[in-house]
Amino acid sequence: MLPDYAEKRLQDWLVQSRRWYRFHYAVALAALALTVTVASKPSIGIRLDVLAWLAAIFQGVQTLFHPQQRAKAYRDAWRRLYLAAAQTGNAPEDDLRRAIAEGWAIISGADS
Image (tube, one colour):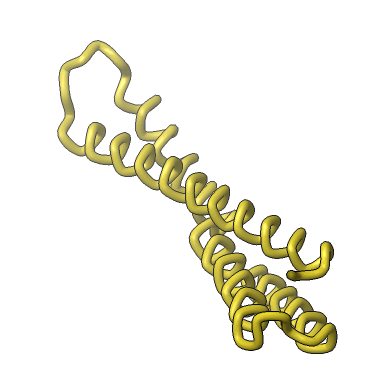
C-alpha cells in the first residue's frame, strides 16, 4: 500500500500526461487538416487566408507549449515513481520521496 502522497502524485502525473497527449493530438491534427486544406486550394466558399491563419495559429500553439514533450515528461515521471513503488511492493519512504523528486526534475526539464 502506497502512502497517500505517493498515490496522489501517481494519479496526478498520469492525468497530466493524458491531458497533454490529448492536447497535442488535437492541436496537431487541427493544424494538419487546415494546412492540407489550404494546400489543396479547394473551392469551398471559405477564404483560404482565414484557414491559413488558423493553421499558423495552431502550429504556433504547438511550438509555444510543446505538448508532446510535456506529456512525455509527465509519463516518464509517472513511470519513475511507479517503478520505485513496484520494485519492492512497499517501497521505503526515502525511495518514494527520491522518485518524486526525480519525477519533478524530469517534468521541469521538459520546460527548458
